[in-house]
Length: 388
Image (cartoon, rainbow, N blue to C red; front, side):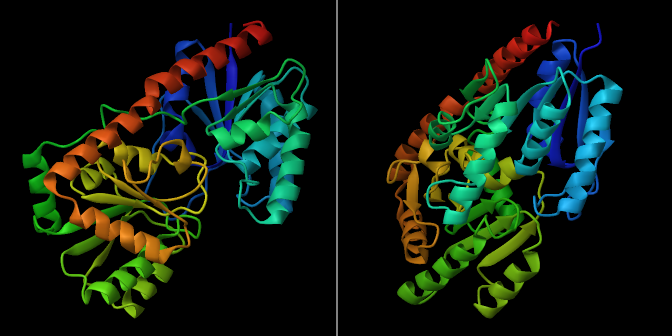
């Protein structure tokens, strides 16, 4: 029996970044996996990756829900794709993917819809427009949702107020799950060699951020924190900050680094495929996002025993403990981030070892084995409902 399943997201890279384990699960269950996204997005990443056995389809879906012309066209394309390929199970991701996927669930009879909310846009502290508009949209779309998957406690509580499709379920999982075989502390010799390759002296406190360069990821607050730290200490001697990632804010950050006189302390490393190595040779990770559904970059650093200087948001609240596995501040508190950087730089070897152990322990519950087990249970239940 053919079991066609469609994974829907906004950008072409979402599948290989976040869905490889789900694809494996579905293929092991005998499903044929299709993937629909805008294959022209994102433009700034080099190349891309494909996953064996997945049938890719381009639709004109746009990141912004307000690009109505594109998203209206994408909805028509999506419905035609579902009907032509005989899709019975749809797993949608990203805000616009979730919008179009569940509208398709209304338009296509016999379609079972799973929606993973990687972070509702009406989070605590969001602008009131978000809380009113996005909450209303999610509540309305819940009626066409068979399984609503969330990845943090705040969203799980909000989802309990929705009325799902008859027999629908709200499920909380630990994100896509951590690959602890990939993210673990590096041997001292390897760490030393990697730092030497990057030109980081042994006595220097090396801080790393990993993520797309955009407004939400908030790397600019770290630059402001470094300026404050320089004012307090007289210099940034012994401090280096590396930013891994690319995006539409790269030129803005380049200008800020120059204008703030931080060129000797801050390096933009661009898009990297060796994030475990970058984190493994760091003394601390900085994770200043304004909004996160969970925040895998923070968890990856913790799994490697690297303390995290994090912004307080619903994602980091799932695993960050101030003073235990790092330090937590408001995403707008440059002084707080400066204090966190100073605290990490002052850690003694014994304090660093104690904090590293706390880091790893706090990341352990997010092992991908747990996420995979929960997703397998959800997929099996969805298949049973379909009659596969």
